[in-house]
Length: 263
Image (tube, rainbow, N blue to C red; front, side, top):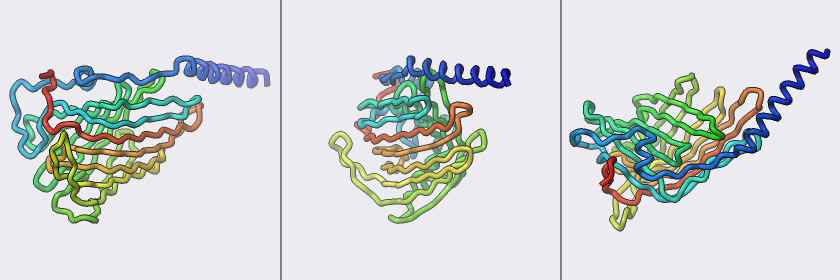
């Protein structure tokens, strides 16, 4: 009985100590400029110019808007996203349809998506998300079906399609996209025609999550406007259940990117 009480006391002390440590080391978000964003994601200027073909032009894009993310663990912690964030596009020199987009919301939250753009549309090949709260990194990597079209030019308004993305540790997310229709958006005073796609996601395994977003794409697959609301709940060992939420809305500031190395 004494051993049980002693062991229980140790657990309580450890948990309380962890809580006090995390509360006294409450983290804040780190806003970064384009140069720092490129270093964080390892983006470099290609040695030779790559023909984009149907893809977006490579380089650094700036988005304006706002958002935040929050976790409830041990009293909770929040990152507030800045007014301007960086998107970096790199093209695959060996595959004429392949490219990747790195979104750096803050230094503690980066997302990399891999795409393939053809005349049939833009397919989401998979993505990697990294977040850091209280000095602890959380990463997740997903591979998506060949049918994971983010945008399909041939679909009429109201058309729907679905696909599945599988996490490296086994989790599965089911996506459903609905083509809302074409919309014109002014980018730096220039009207551009976009495809507005509403994408919802649902996960029901070790984690329970839902996501709803609207994305406005160019024919190349470049997001001109993006808004998303995401919530996920998962068990976090002896610390209990953790709920994380994320919401943002951003819009492209210019159609022409700057060089990754800086103009």
